Image (cartoon, rainbow, N blue to C red):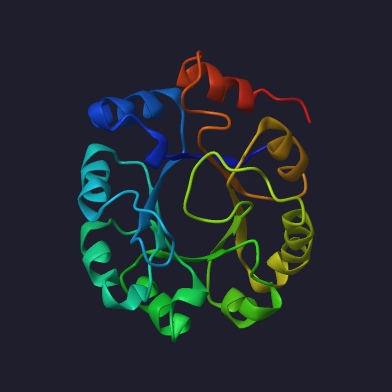
Length: 220
């Protein structure tokens, strides 16, 4: 079964960031998930523009940039200048007055457009945006911190999105509290990719390669 695995780099060892990137590459990670937080849209700070640019220069693999910032249209140009064509940029629709215009900036720059949907955001409230994005990042926890517990009602939201994805032409990605059982349940149903953080990938006794190999070899 084909599904994508992306590493949540806010969970990496920043004292050895380049080494972390190379070890994850060698382990077979598909892409690098970059969480940008401004302390306003969420009450936390995570990675910066420069952290993102460093990783972009350290790898040829795609970046998935998750902008958890208020009014991303004000600063999105700074991020787009440092990314490569084919990288993904997610915005939160609630954070923007005119999210479709910001999404169009991403498209015009040659990036893959995406939206991130919080646990408390209904599919109905972003329905029109589903027609213009390629990826939908479903937050299974409230945004802002790693290591949170999965919110079970998000499963119903994924069911709704799965019923729409073929008609509206988008792929679904899982972000937050991603454990092996979530991959085992939702990959066969059509979820395209999973963001791996402290629940499954970082801070474990096994190597990144051992963990990723175990995930790839799971029986469904």
